[in-house]
Length: 317
Ligand SMILES: NC(=O)c1ccc[n+]([C@@H]2O[C@H](COP(=O)([O-])OP(=O)(O)OC[C@H]3O[C@@H](n4cnc5c(N)ncnc54)[C@H](O)[C@@H]3O)[C@@H](O)[C@H]2O)c1
Image 1 (cartoon, rainbow, N blue to C red):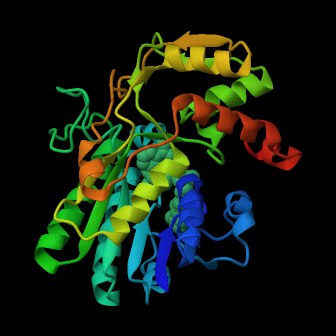
Image 2: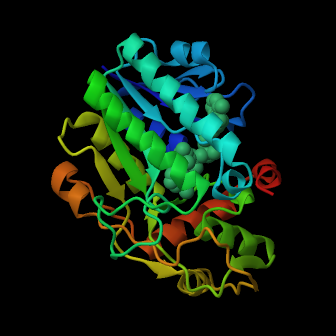
Image 3: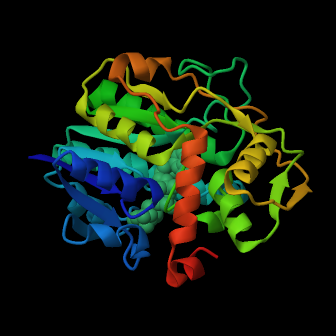
């Protein structure tokens, strides 16, 4: 039987990856903080093993990865906003702990690490659209800097120690179970605000363009990357098509029949104006491409927003 551990498996992306791996007959272990909110993985009870611990604690990480051939690294301790507010903490909890993970992985005989990086931030302001993987990395936010530093450590470690890895640079994943309370993820946040009849805040004039990829498509890319041994190690995961926030608002209003109230705020200095990923490499090498159209993705996410229980609604506030 195929086997893998998902560090951060109780989160938005991790819980969907667990669904995907179980569907493909993996024995799955989830690693999360003690007392983490179980709402994303309640449905997996009995189907996965679970280990609790702190990613910043070496012996906890060792317990999690021992005997695991594949490690999916999805622990994200900061957001764009919080990393900007505390750069030192961001480096500490993300970069240093990831480097320790690499050292422990060698010791424990891990065969491959699959890391979720950020296609939205590692490139910085782009000189070419759509952005290919060989575009220079010039992040303009601490979050993107940490992600690119971890990527470089994976690459260096592979060169020096031979530990195989894959880096998946996600565009903007969206869909059910996304946490809408973090001011992150425009589609889910807009739908949540519409559901609650509250205004949305848009930083800037709404012209910022992003590439939105539906979550169940995106996690397939992670599984394929784990399964294929390729000389290419870094892949964009997006759709290759960009939409402005104002276009997303219009799509949402059309699909739901609702009307979104918008408060336009000052732009944030660390948001790049346009980010659309070129996805030809992952299509050619891993045979992956996104299948869900924006309209289908909005419809599915809207159904989920409307189907949540009262308890879940209280948590997402
Ligand atoms: N969601 C996005 O838009 C997006 C886009 C690109 C990249 N990413 C990256 O993908 C990864 C997963 O993102 P997500 O949206 O699923 O995040 P999430 O916050 O929903 O999940 C993160 C998980 O990590 C766990 N975790 C956090 N700190 C921990 C610690 N110290 N010890 C043990 N577990 C800990 C949490 O319990 C949670 O289960 C992150 O690295 C994130 O930066 C996310």
